[in-house]
Length: 506
Image (cartoon, rainbow, N blue to C red; front, top):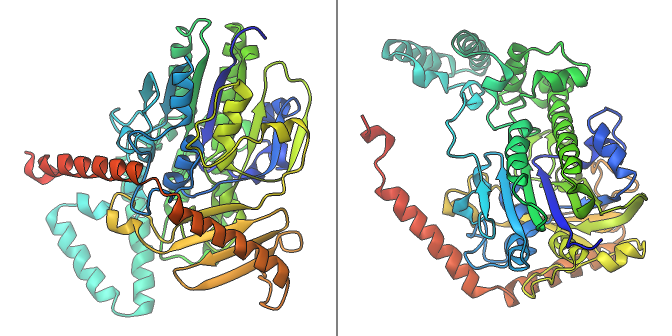
């Protein structure tokens, strides 16, 4: 190949490794990617180094551990080296199309290095499905008299457990009934984020002008993210066209309830997973559309193509839902990773754990672009070319319970850390002072932690790896980038505080 290869990076929010066909899923979520996988590098155990999104993406884009600039820093620092900046400096055109995820916005520095950065956050908001997914949101839209009546009933009913449960149930169904009457009940109206079709459409428009210059195209797709409202075409492709928008609204509302036990939620698990899977199928359909256009423009055979997820999603496997930073279970930290190289026609399966810390330097190496010295990860391209099994333990971490990173105080809690090798996984919960060791070969579901007396050499080895990581964390912190990030955050807070509040606007 005479020209410098381009890079197409597609990241999919909430994409579990065990829900794609090329890693063994029985449902037909990814027929196009399954075919592409036969000519690609497929990673059996790609492990995110942080979760959720605000901890996973500094790792993927800047090749550093998520807490390396301090627990109170979210996002990228103003002058931090990134994958996009490295390619921009190498002469690449760079474009990013991010499907409305606020944690991947300009505020958090993800626009840096891109000639065009479109995060779709400025677009007029569609109907917020979260309005219909909580028990109390509808209350805000009632007239004062209705509010007073409901408040009186709530005060009386919640005094005793039996009447509290009855009140919550009646109120949930009342809210659902109200919303089905007042909302346009179509999937595209209920969806919170722009779908993959819209993202790919914008990307194809941008690609028309790249010519023969090498480019970086980053797409971040949100279709499998909750609330789950896939297009009807995707449900039909999954042979579940019987699920209507009204049913999807009810399923999402029920799945989001905080007053329902996992045992009861299990009744809805199959259909909720179907909605999630249909979101993945829509991503697969749109990736196929993107590739077909690239082929027509003569760009496909000149590009490295990578698709992965930023974290997974839980569906009651450990009693929970979504991907909150309270657990580092496999369904949340293991993601698919597929890399296709120009003119590659052979299948290669990569065994052993692969940390996403090494993704950016490895991709740069495949392109022949120098890897920034500041990257904490390193390229594994030579090992992959040699067909080696990866043996190095990998780490995943987050701040325990940081569910609202917009508030700085929420960012500085205790750490949750997992160390995983090909067979064993050690979980260190500093918030609750707990330690668990799992044998993933014997107990892949992580339900039976080994006793303290079992596998002591393994436990000691993984503990040493965790200790070494924490030691490096203190010694190698980039103080300058940390200060730049904190100053940027303070400037943003000051800007926001000077804006009139919504209550003050007539």
